[in-house]
Length: 245
Image (cartoon, rainbow, N blue to C red):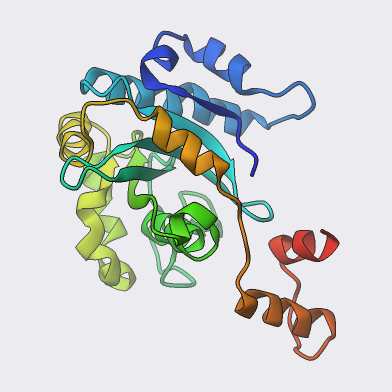
């Protein structure tokens, strides 16, 4: 699978925000301003927090591509402090600084501070990525790498966080401790320390990247039915890519 960068956190922490962006941009690809701003702000800050948490030997994979257009913002690789097993932490990063008022269209969609704009709830998104890897990533599926998840929303004030877990979002309240917002660096540092051993994450990162993404028989059965027009369904971007392959 594709990714833009995989390296030791301590080495990445020595880069400036602009150098980090330049290191990530491949010569044969372009990424929009919003993505580059995320790397300069969210990703850069995440790297600094992990580094100053005494976990500089962990490895970080950025912009890991799943099937289709889905990409995981960051995956932090190391070994579990509790079990000693290889551990990969999925980080869903958001630039949000305010959540809009009013009812969402769906329970997993959050209204932005713009008219009629909705985006996937960060908790729903991070678990969606976890489930995709558990079902389709060869190494994770085999049980060789344990997964963990969190959402990093460094621009969102603490006063806005309750909006993510009330009303139609009550089902996500049990995962509020996995969402880290503005001025949450101390709590995030403590959480990272509870997850990871202080040792190199290179082996886990290379093991993860050596895995391949494989669809299950059920996935192929569903895609085949769509391609044969047996179901009235829209072919999603990831299904289009699989059919072309």
